[in-house]
Image (cartoon, rainbow, N blue to C red; front, side, top):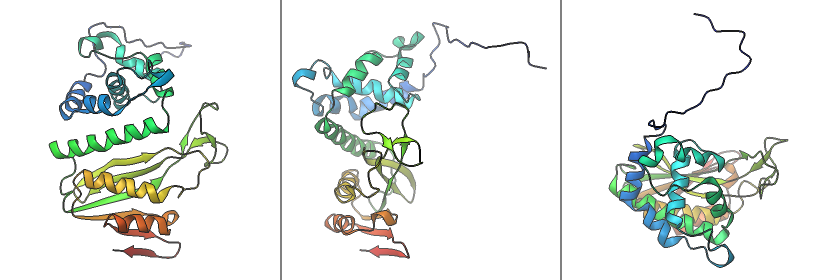
Length: 258
């Protein structure tokens, strides 16, 4: 068998009206609904003022965004995959990319904090109703680390030339929650400008991550782990206030504090 070398281009189209490319979303959406994610979004996310119309029905828009990302979307345009062919036979309330884009552009810092509250409550409910974090009540680990995300549109707010050199990036900080028996799940995230220092806002963020961990059932020993960029008094103080131990790498050795 040999490919045809004479072809100059190949076009592939998904045009069967009775097929669904992402049917696995059915179980995911049902689980989110059972745990109450749409209700949390409707109760906690409130966009008022001039952007009120963009913020209408936040539950449908939040669910559309979550489902699209789980299906592989990494841009607003990609959310249109939820409306391909027979998807409307499985799901109702899917919003168009333009509507979802207007929804996200209406967000202020306060609305982002509202989403953080939704995330914390949803994680707690999910942990309570599924075996997501077995053993979280005995021993749990909170790992804190920054990351650089390459951004391709120069007009995107907050993007700057950071690391790697020559690339425009955003510089979010992440906290994951895990146990000796479970893989990590995201406990907290905060978006920052591309040139933000690695440890910028790390103290309050550590407190937020630990609060999310406690809310998710981490009532026993909690250990915060971080690299040398987070070896500072604010991070250690946040751990002590939350009653958590810390294991932070300094430039020469590991410092363990209880």
